[in-house]
Length: 188
Image 1 (cartoon, rainbow, N blue to C red):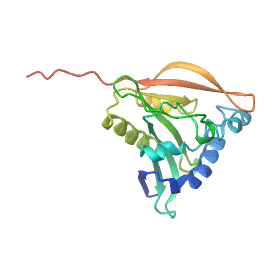
Image 2 (image 1 turned 90 degrees about the vertical axis):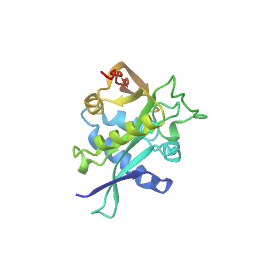
Image 3 (image 1 turned 60 degrees about the vertical axis):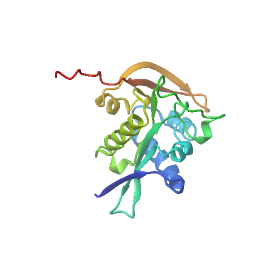
Image 4 (image 1 turned 90 degrees about the horizontal axis):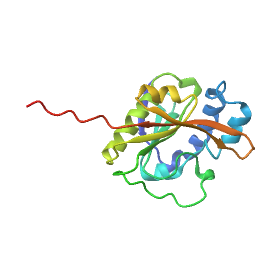
């Protein structure tokens, strides 16, 4: 397996629209019911092209398999907390890095490539990108299966709640936050 990581382009949208439902339907079972997963597809679990246009969304490709996209995820400097284009209802204004956290967004891995470090690497790219943009704090609205990954990156749960879905079910999620590391004075 040879993986490459790059920023997503709008041309990747069709491949992402195939990957996201496949990932959700396979890797979220056991945490959510099939009805919850289906209700979340398209609105909560979906492609957010604003992230792609902002240059904050990454894809992992398998270079040995015709550059097939096998993972995706990123960070956002926008107010939207989660969801794809079909879940948006209005403008998506920018966050203020001085007072608001960046948001980790939309991580999905192909089931055949799960637990191989793809999410971890995309997380590292996302955190580095948000720091370079001046954000000192980062949040995520994590799915239940994602909570463990984010905890390994020192994110702490700050709130649990349910997102209402179009099919009259709800999706339990966890808002998690990572604070900046404290500055250590130079003992000179």
